[in-house]
Length: 179
Image 1 (spheres, rainbow, N blue to C red):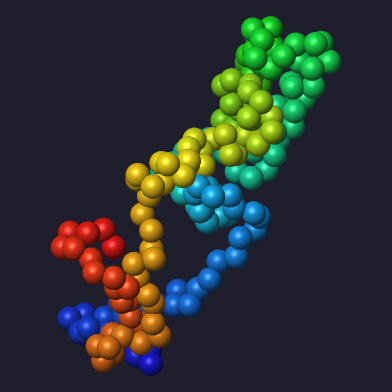
Image 2 (cartoon, rainbow, N blue to C red; image 1 turned 90 degrees about the vertical axis):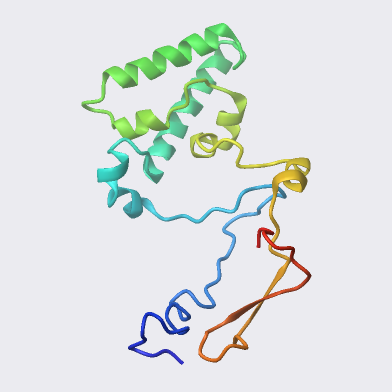
């Protein structure tokens, strides 16, 4: 039961949260090894321009960047250049430079979303995904570096009175283990 007034030194302090029982739903298939992310929304970044600056790309900027990437890839393809060729990369450098020089009519956020190198991965996966390197880890990497939450069980109520929900170890955890 939530109480309006709780002493800061009480065990009840912080035991209840508006996030209790919050769930998330995957908006797309998530392959094994893919980092789970939460979409804060463009408003979150706009409200923090004082900290991040005004060049952080927003959703629509990544979409515009993807259109530019696709157009450049079509131009390379139409002229029988492979994406990996020096000629295609030179075309991409010229494309990026033209947008950099024209920031009065072109958003600096879109320019920030443009990758430095045009690759098949950017063309296939998009500029937003390209901006987050290592978003998909190999199973071997996860086995070495990953942390699993299967060592906890969440229960509706703690065994400690007024402590809110409880998290209980499902197996022995050595001192200094990461929980």
